[in-house]
Image (cartoon, rainbow, N blue to C red; front, side, top):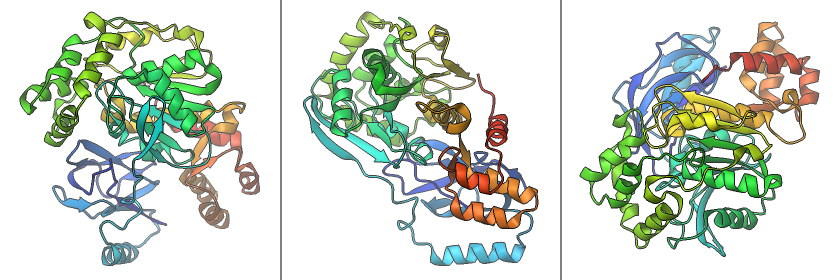
Length: 434
């Protein structure tokens, strides 16, 4: 079997990326999620992960080469595939590839909905399963989830929302919790998994405490609301900045690696800040949530009894990582080394894996072994390892890329796969973090 390693689409405006560096050599054994190459876009640098298990048989793209979204970076295949077959795969792909017409390039487009709290802009990707709603932080927008939307949408609809005063939503000051409620109602979402970053984490926690039956699980990424301290210079500096020179050092406080702040990122934020009503909306939020350089409220998170995941960057310069210690005892807490205030961007692969496993184990009314989403490639590899080629081909043909061990229980039984052992094996391969 031959798998394509392609140039991903990160964000609405990405059309191409520059391959900065290969992180593995040809001939390297890969598992799903391994970091294979670093790519630079006009927004931010990111890491391309292996979409399938196998051997990196061919590095097609050269370092510093610019590749369109959907273009071929490399080829993953097992040892049984001949060099001639690899050559033919590359030639066929290159002959038929048209930039802008690939599955990767055809990403979701923003939508808007009018609610009693104003017009709200959002993106939705994926279908089936229980919905996940992503909430950005102060001064951010739905584009902050560019590395997370696609990986998390394999078995569920994922919504990324622009909160009032941000992105493409109305700029008049509005109650953020009321806006979240209104958005969920507008989409007919009775219950959802919530994941919030920074200020968005506070909004998510507020809903979980006010209406716990509406929240299937809660993921907080460097959230506000777990302590009083916050970097006043960041909040005030973000509001006050009017040009590249004064905005760049403010944005660099979001990352452990300041080099992640690109000129395009700075220009996008400046464009947003120059919209009518933005400055006033941000000032209103600051005065309401972070008066006098302190957080106005510390939420009583121990009152929330549902599944809870807390992720923080050890080198957070905006909200101290020490606040993670305030998470209640039932929380699954991870503090990531060499990561700043935006783990979902700076350590996207790690955050996606943590969140995917958490969501799989936190679906309401289903046991841990029943809810795990397992990569199809893992099952196919097990079947091949025991010499059952026919079963492996059937699994590859009939299973989705992410296998729900409850919904696919019948087929797994036919394939003589022990679900409990499969889940234990998958958890054993998952990296220990924090």
